[in-house]
Length: 362
Image 1 (tube, one colour):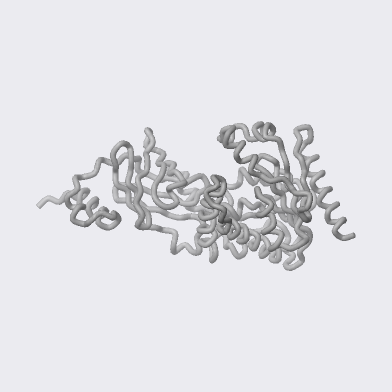
Image 2: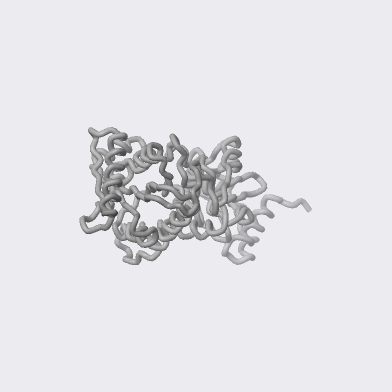
């Protein structure tokens, strides 16, 4: 008897991954032909995972937020759908995703795929992503001399996107030989330390991913944080616990690394509420100085032109950032204006930090 191998595979996948009864799988007609292009797909824009699909099946390889490599490969199945769709099953959860007209972009799906599109890439690009270096979360590489336990100054630059946090921090770190910890490193699961003369934005996708105990928890906390931030923004909840938990994890990582590395520190990350800044103050101590950058929406639009965000989205991001309060301890407000160069802004911020430190000593 001749066996229809493709039909048999589809039936077995249906039984293994779908929620419908097993007898219904046998009675289902063969699914439509595949609606996608075989090959490799990058998950999202920060190399969280990579998917490989061919005629033999699909594999999902997680690349970030791993406690160990043993949990990198995760069970996955693709079944062709109607109207340019594909039914994707990942870790036992199934959802329908939409395939683009050129079959190279797939939007939607279960788990992490619900918010991170799949984008087809070349085999050469896939090899680079798969073989990207990893470093232990307990001891990421630091491009500065280590002085364990000998902690010095610590300043934290915050403010809306486009205000110049990373640029100012990089200039101060290079000029004063401070340790530059980029909060996006914690947020995106890569080495947070910025090398002298390195552009954090450009190097973001190339920096080594962190791996080791605690990274899976960080990834889970990040998902809950993003959901909570969305709900808070829509006034769907007043429960801040996921946000508080996530920021507490970041603050504890800064505290641990600061003791391991030592020296004077400057941290950059976009924190939009005083309540969030209070979490870092509680964990990092009274010597923490916040510099909250302020910038006009028109200047933000000019600076971020071409980054893909529309004016409405930029405005929504911009207005949610709370300025420094007059009664907020060890917190400085600084306005970014167009007429000053980035070097002038950095020097002015450094002067304010040193003035605050001197004032606290008197």
